[in-house]
Figure 1 (cartoon, rainbow, N blue to C red):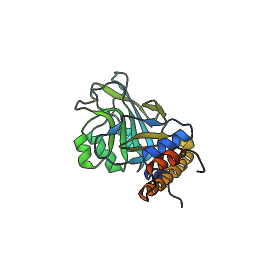
Figure 2 (tube, helix red, strand yellow):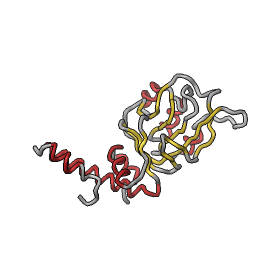
Figure 3 (cartoon, one colour):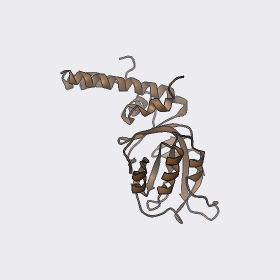
Figure 4 (cartoon, rainbow, N blue to C red):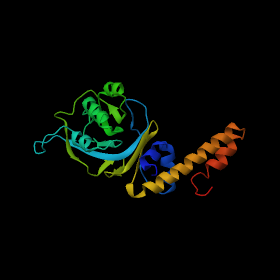
Amino acid sequence: MGTKISDRLLKLDTCAVSDAMDALGLWGTVNEINPISVRRRIAGRVQTVKLGPASKIIPKSHLCSAAIDASNPGDVIVVENHTREDAAGWGGILSTAAEHKGVSGTIVDGPARDADESIDLGYPVFARSTVSSTARGRIVEHAWNVPVVIGRVNVEPGDLVVADSSGVVFIPKDREEEVVAKAEEIAAKEVAMGKAVRSGKPVSQVMGGDYEKMLVSGD
């Protein structure tokens, strides 16, 4: 049985995957979402949550809880939280529940809180900022398992994502095999380039020749 594509993706950093997306003419890279707890690469299928302004007409439910309950081990919770900069779209109890469920990590386009609690759990949370203030009375969950926008990237439930200290990259599910294969090709070239530098080849030659041709298939 072949290796799952999410396991292959986990072996690749976001830089190689972003380069692969560039080579294939795809857009999926999001900047300025950073680790706020443990610094560990995460990769997996996306479970989406869309947060928005608090409203009396929206049934009350604790944000993100339905997505956690529906997640499979290895999934990544992805939260659109664009409404307010003082309202956390993720917190410590959610990290506890997600870690217990086997979720790989959480990505919040917006603020999150309880960073220390997530650190103690060893649970990876990526967010644009940290706050102490609660979501209660400020934002609510509008929907889950729906399309969301993270940065300027349209993300669908079931897409793939990889996140590390360099950034976040989303891969459309209908192009995932092509993207991961291209990223593996690029990563292999980078390994070869590192070996060339360590063997004494001038870095100007490695970067000026090998690097500039890296995105071209077949080199």
